[in-house]
Length: 181
Image (cartoon, rainbow, N blue to C red):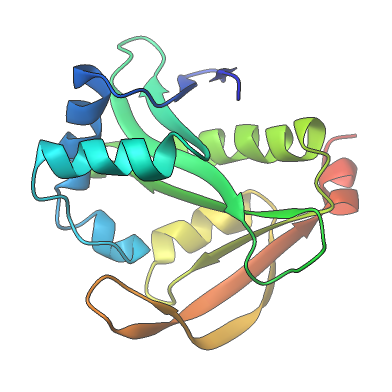
């Protein structure tokens, strides 16, 4: 997993450092961030450390940093696509600090990770899902060129045990190639 640089961002692998732990905790403890993605706000830096150690570090998950300040403003990753068996596919997932919303950062980061997935991993397809109420995420998904597949009813159980619907999107390799000519 390599570092990815964009015009305004640096995507770095997570490490179990004070900077990364506190960077994650600062934005992940905000009650307006996690619930949009289906996870509860972090209650302590120790909880953030566990997420970095057990979820981010073993998988393809980057810290999103502002390029100039190196401040962590989010996370983005590619996880196994649970909806497609025996296909070279990954599912994109992300979260962003509230104070970074509306600045185009997530679209910039997502496009870089989409390129990584198709170029470096040779993906056949990339998927992404979001809740019907998460309009901000839906805008990022559409700006990145994903196609809407449909609504999966009660397809995802969130942190409080509630089953919620998923808006399911995908991008085929040939669609990515067409957009990169």
